[in-house]
Length: 124
Length: 378
Image 1 (cartoon, one colour):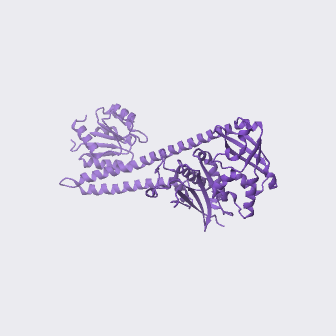
Image 2: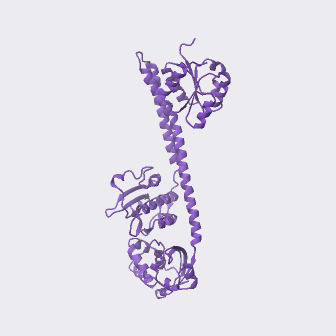
Image 3: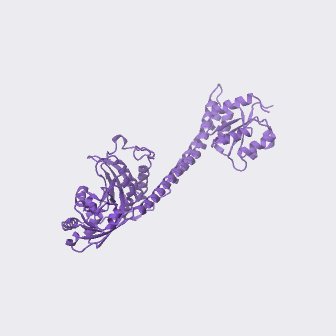
C-alpha cells in the first residue's frame, strides 16, 4: 500500500521536470520523473496514480504515450501540459483520454487543485 | 521638342561660379526660395505638336511661358540643370515630373544639348519623352517590393518574438514551479528546509538560463554585423533620396542636399547607412505632413574633426520635449499605423557602425537628426 499518491512527470526539459517534481512533492505527493515517454515502462505505469506529461518530446510524443496508456491503463488520469496551447491540441488530448489540459508555465495552485480533484475521484 | 530660354539661369549660375560658389546644389539647398524664383525665370518659348499632345495640353499657347507653371513645387531636377551648367557639361538629361493642364502629374524624360557660350542659352532645344506609364509600372513594382520587405520584416519580428517567448517560457515555468514549491515547503509547522534550499538553488539556475536566452538572442540580433568600408557618404545620401523620391513626392516633400567640398570617405556600411538615411528622410517627410508651406527637408553633410556629420533637418513641429528620450525606443511611435521601428533600427544601426545618432529640436522649429560617422583612416 502506498503512503502517498505517486505522480509521474514526463518532460524532456530537465529543469522544468525537476521543478515540477519538487512542486508535486510540496503538495504532499510522491513524484516519479521521466525525461522520455519510453522510460515510463509498463511496470512503472502500473505504479502511478496520475500522469503529468508534456506533448512535444523527441522520440515518443505525449500523444503517443496517451495512446499507449489508453490501451494499458485506460482509467489512469492524465494531465497534459504544453508550451504551445492550441484548441486542436487540447481537443486531441481530451479525445485521447486526458482529464486536464494546461498551458506552460503551469499555475501551481491550478495543478494542485486538479491533482486533488483527480485523486479524490479515485484512479483505476 | 521644346525651345526654352535658360539665359537667366545660366547667367545667374555663371555669376555664382565667378563669385566663388563651387557647390551650386549646396548653395541653393540653403536658399530654396531663390531657387524657385530662378525657376520662374526659365521661359518656354515654343513646343512642337508632339510635346503638346504628350503634355495633354489643349493648345500650344497653354504651354508657353514660365517653366514654373509646369514644374510642381516638389521638383528635384531643376537644381541639377544648374549644377550641369556650373560644371560646363554639354549635355543634360533628367527625369522630371511636370504638371499637366488638369493638374495631373506626368513623368517626363528631358534631354538637351547645352551650348558653350552663355548667350546661346536663350535658345535651347529640349527633347522630351512621356514616361508616365513606365514610371507607374516601376512604382508599382517598387511598392510591391516595399510591401514585401515590410511583410517580411513583420514576419521576422513575429517569428523572433515567438522563438524568444518559447525559449524564455521554459526557464520561466521552472522558476514559477520552484518558487511555489519553496513557499509550500516553508509553510506548516515543520518546514522542509532541505527542499527549500534545493528549490532556491534550482531557481537561481533557471534564472541564469533565462538570462542566457536573452544574451543569446541579443547576440543573434547583432550578429548581422555591419561590413564597414571607406564609403562615399554623398553617394549614399543621393541613393537614399532616390530610393524614397516617390514617397517624398507623395508626401509633397522635397529633399535638398548641402555639403562641403573634399568630404573625406566615412568608415561605414553603405547599405546600413542608406537604410538609416531612408528612415530619417521618411521620418522628416512625415513630420512635415500637414504643413501649408513648401515642405523642404535639408540634408546637411559636414566634416567636424574626425567625424562626418549628416544632418536631416525639417521645419515640422519638432519633437515634443517629453518624448525626446523615447523616440528611439523600439515600438514607440506617434504616427497612426507606424510600427515604431524606423528610428530604433536607425540608432542601433548607427551604433553598430561605431557611429551615433541623436535628435535635437531647432530653436526656430522643426527637428534635426544628427548622424555621426567616423572618417575612414587617412
